[in-house]
Amino acid sequence: MSTRLNDPKVGAQSSADRHARPVPHSPPRPRSHSRSRSTSRGRSASPVPRRHNKRTRRHTPPPSNSSQTSGHSRGHKKRSTHKKRHRSHHRGSDREVALPPATAVSPTVCNTVMAAIIDAKDHKWQIRDHTSLAYQLQGAARFLFRQNGPFIRVYHVFVLGLTFYGNAKHIAKAARKMPHFKDFPEKDVLIMWKAFNEFLVDVPWFTDIIPGLRDSADHTRSLCSFLEYHARTARSDDIASLKRDAHLFTEDIDLPNGVNIPAFHTDMGNKSNRGWNHVGLARLLVPRSMRDKFDEDPKKFVRKVRTGVYKITAEDYPSFMHADDGYDTSAEDKALGMGEFLLLCGRRIFTGPRSAQSEPGAQGAGRKTVAQLKNMSTVTPQNIAYTAVIARFAINGQPGWRDNDGLFHGAAFFKHIVDLFDADPTWARETLQWWNMQLFGYCEPDAHEHHAAEGRSTAVSRIAAQRAARRAAQHDVELRQPPPRALRTRMLALALVLAQCITLRPYSHHFLAVPTTRKTTVRKHTKVQTKARQWRINLPKSSRSQDTTRMRSI
Picture 1 (spheres, rainbow, N blue to C red):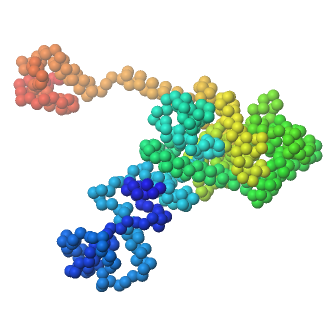
Picture 2 (picture 1 turned 135 degrees about the horizontal axis):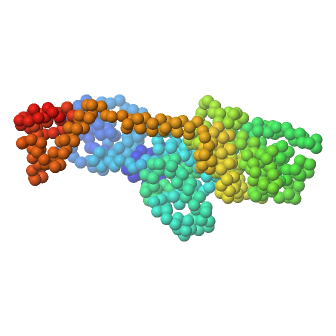
Picture 3 (picture 1 turned 90 degrees about the horizontal axis):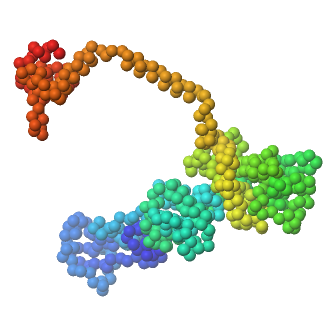
């Protein structure tokens, strides 16, 4: 950090660094008998104007190391020791930072951003200046996990991006030759590369600081720590909101066999009574294929899960991911990802708490939601998978965030959900359209619906066809009508002029002469020029007027 702060390109120093090391002062000037000595800022303490004082300094001998002056004139009132040291200290800092215009170097974008980020480390990585570029990075970092999953490694994403930006040919194979990525599959490398490019879309100017980050490993580590901190903070905020409102998304259930499943009531954030310790939440965590067995005797089923008789892993989708009335044992992916609890959690995260139990697309007043800050108009598979992971953690019994919950691996759970959308495009299209309708109140028609609607008669297609028919009929009528007399006269005159220019036939004994030189000049009669102005034809001037009577016949 000290190397960065001593660099004049960086800018102002932090307050911690000012008090951590002594600031160099310029050596004091020897006491002069004619003028009073200068202060630490270089200004004269005497009532003589400054310009005269500068003129006097030219004849002052160079300062010596043996001079031990106090730096105050005799006529000034003596200040306290504490204030004097404090002011001289800041004056020395100002002198060190504010370089003369001849040697000052304007700070680059990279140095300016990194100076703000490193200074924010002492304030829990919070950027106070909302107009700075570093504050934009802080906002974009909050979407890293929401957009790419809570298990993505921020440091690896940006090391990969900074290394291969501008030269991404065969990136999957080339990255595995680096020690950071030798253990990553090619698919994971491509996922990290996609995450970096999506970050560039959110922060377009980030490409300007890539060269500076490549030259400084310390800056890269500080940037990654800054971004990962805010990504984790956003994840913690989403978990806290779901933990607080989870009791609003459950209700009492009376089963046909007479068993009552009680709703979950708030426990003030104490997760020791959640997960398999609460029957209502355990019914949401149990796999859908095993829920019928759970409903027969919930307490017995929970006891077998705790003892390890029933093993539940990330490959078993929880019941809250399925719609209650759409489960089919022969097609288990039907209505998968459309569970009511999952949808309410998704609304709570992306469209705000007021929209959780409102009509689709409802947006409450107040602070902007995550979707509004991100300008989200569609849902991605990663958004759904992120919601499922956060929702499961909010209702399980883990006191703090962990990637795994016993045999249940969170990263594998996230990956399996995303793979569902990659394996079946038809199912993915229908599921995403349903989510877009539930969150934003509309869904964009896809290409298949456009092709299906081409043969269907709609009001838009009928009006367009009727207008085209009217334009065609009007065009035919205009072609059949003869042109006006004035237009015919102009057309005839223009044809005569063009015929004379092309065939070189004399219109009278003064014909249009076209010489063989490069600059072709055409001489016309005065009457021809008069008619040409009426016909809006630009012709050169002519002084001949012998054929005035003949031109009247045109």
